[in-house]
Amino acid sequence: MKACFMGLGYIGLPTAIIAASHGVQVVGVDVNPEVVKMTNRGKLHIIEPGMEELLQDVIESGALHASLEPEESDVYLIVVPTPFKGNHEPDISFVESASLAVLPLLKEGDLFIIESTSPVGTTEYIRDMMFTARPELAGRMHIAYCPERVLPGNVVKELVENDRVIGGIDEESAAAAAEFYRRFVKGRIHLTDCKTAEMCKLTENSSRDVQIAFANELSLICDKAGVNVWELIELANKHPRVNILQPGCGVGGHCIAVDPYFLTSDFPFESHLISKAREINNYKAFWCAEKIINAILRFEKENQKKPVVALMGLAFKPDIDDIRESPACHIVHKVLHSNEGAEILVCDPNVHVSDIQLTDFETAYERADIVAFLTAHRQFKTLPWRDDKIILDFCGIFKRN
Ligand code: SAJ
Image (cartoon, rainbow, N blue to C red; front, side, top):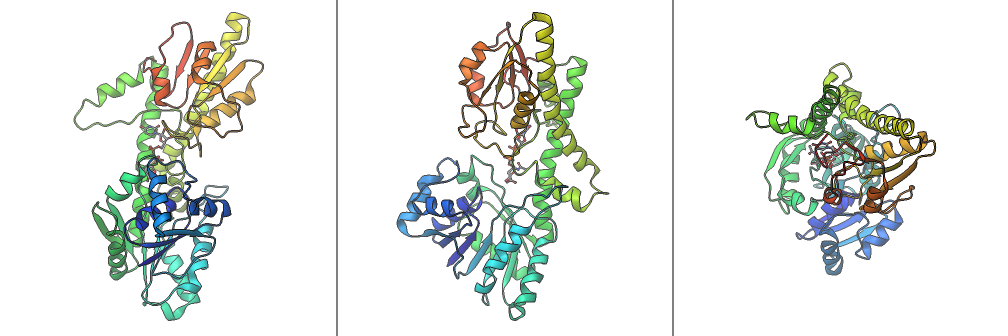
């Protein structure tokens, strides 16, 4: 069996590697020549523990190669980004162009799968587009939607162990896609129709966004009420049916901070809660920036000098290097922009490429008068609490305020 993966990003590349290591002959296609070159050299262009070793194995064995052009295969997988446009409307143009690129190669009996997070109705739209251009294929090939669910940083395990939801344009399509995934998925495979599968992905991430918004809203209430939000949540979670998540400085990454808009954009009158959760999580980053700026102003007034400020963290969540849609980055830029003379030290032990000059986190912590924790990296948790500093612990490093 040969599979053609359109897109070698955070999901496409790991899935292509895992499929290749389970007996599938894989061609991985990407529009970025550097990604293609690196992949063929066995070098991973993303950070994902354990994945580079697997890539080297499948490159050496010849089970996977990367290319700028799709090749004739039995299975085609669309794993390209679906960003949003200016007004948060989903942009499926990469799904469309990747589908059009494989269209001339399709033949009777082929399996075509979309994995990219997509608005409800996308698979049927792409099916209609393809069968209009190639009417002889209508009813003669399989088309399905199968969203990924892996957590960055834990992809090697989750790609194999997580359950998968597969939605077909018909029952035969869902069954054909399930047969493909069974080659490397040990989790259970649940079959449905393609609209339900599309919506399932959006529901999973919107649900998490709403739950985080609840925690973030609590943190704002607690700040005003003078209650320690960390202790409060820990105590409330002792109830057998309560499970509140952790507040932070906002929600980032290219999934949870994006996918709910695919529902709010298409169903604006029905999605009040989902939409409000997005607002709350976005507002939390703005609120944190304001807190830091106010602390700087207060310090200046009380001490008649400018403070040294340490901003700890740039990544969008703990222990990774990814800064996409990162609220910490947003806060750092806002504070740097509004700063009038305070010395601002920015630290992130995991991030190496950045437009901001970075300082070693231990040095910054030692020197700073004001410390704001933006990302709960494990390295920060080794720092001792210091009574002589103003500590703004937005992500629960010390859980003291
Ligand atoms: N966050 C909090 N408080 C929490 C948990 C998370 O503020 O208690 C923040 C994080 O700091 C981060 C953001 O939420 O800024 C998102 O992080 P995450 O760990 O919740 O999720 P992602 O974006 O890394 O991955 C999610 C996962 N979806 C769900 O858990 C429902 C993953 O399974 C999906 O595959 C992935 O989105 C995706 O690609 O869609």
